[in-house]
Image 1 (cartoon, rainbow, N blue to C red):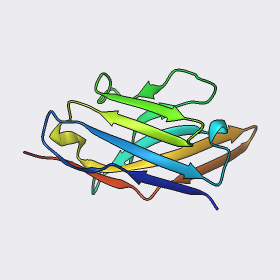
Image 2: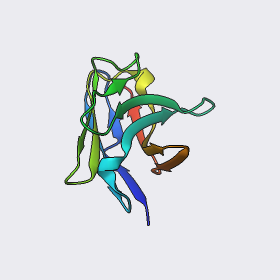
Image 3: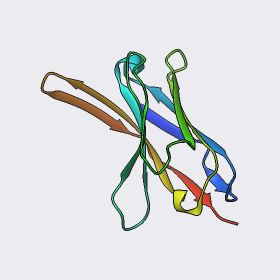
Image 4: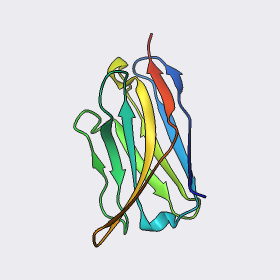
Length: 120
């Protein structure tokens, strides 16, 4: 049974930091690109950061570049999102995503989300 369990969300003041974690189970973690997305009510889910397989360089949305850092631990089957210099516009539900593409097949899983609120 595939599970992606996010944790680490909460309320933080502008300029503060949070570290999100996503613990994965039920699939071969090292074979999946691990990604973070976020969503606010009434808007589409948007890409935040990606940690590809095989130690390829991570990718970030322009809005978080220089402030957020994605990392993964293939032994602990966990992906992290370190968020620094948080802004009110970072307020959203953050979702962990696992993605694998092979030939014409796609495997994709989502976590349940964790709320991040940036407010004075």
